[in-house]
Length: 345
Image (cartoon, rainbow, N blue to C red; front, side, top):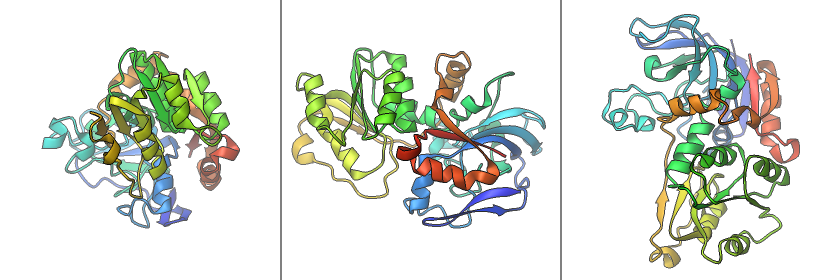
């Protein structure tokens, strides 16, 4: 089968690899019909995720059709159309029983990280009964790919961890797919002001279409001064970091109001300064989280009922044999205006 393989920092290749086989009784083999590329994949390629070893098939998002299942898999059968969660969960360990699936003792974020992932024709899914979801008949498979990762990530790590509430003021730093997913799902809670900050004018335009009340181009404007002007000099109740670089995390520290929350989503490969000399007395909360995907069933209903237009995040489509072009397009988003790219084997 064809697969996109990580070969070390800055290196990747489309290769022929053996079709995966069942390794445990609760495994399933899924034939991929749609997958995508995540910003986390770009972090891996930059060398920011040393736990991902060269030789790994990348990808942790997708939908597909069950090919085979192990003897212990009782919820799925060959031919079922399924959504693949980016988090694999045994459903039984102490972390899973607390709803922290991302820290599952035999799962967590393993797809495209410590085991082979979804940017291939087939993928092996451990703990299939608790790591896959049935797709409703007639569902838009492309839109549902957004439920593998970015929608639950934006909702859980940004909205829920950020304690976004009715009437709250929110700044989202980073208008990439994760920041926009946070913006879409923040509207479940009717914040009074959602401010999107990004140096890319095209992405700021998308943010306005998605419901941002204000946008700031921090490549041209003083984001701190503008946010303070919009909030009567107080700052925002929630500042969401959706990029993963030191400068944006430090910017969030300058935007948050006393008593507010900084919700980190970004994947950080470098240390960032925490300015306790300013913030020690401000009663702020800083949250970090790897998505648990506990919200996937709720978001699945929201997407299939059209309450959230997940398909609007998709800008480009490629065949699997053009996945290197897809990576080039996704990696040059400022030039290509790419958000999410769909890849079809």
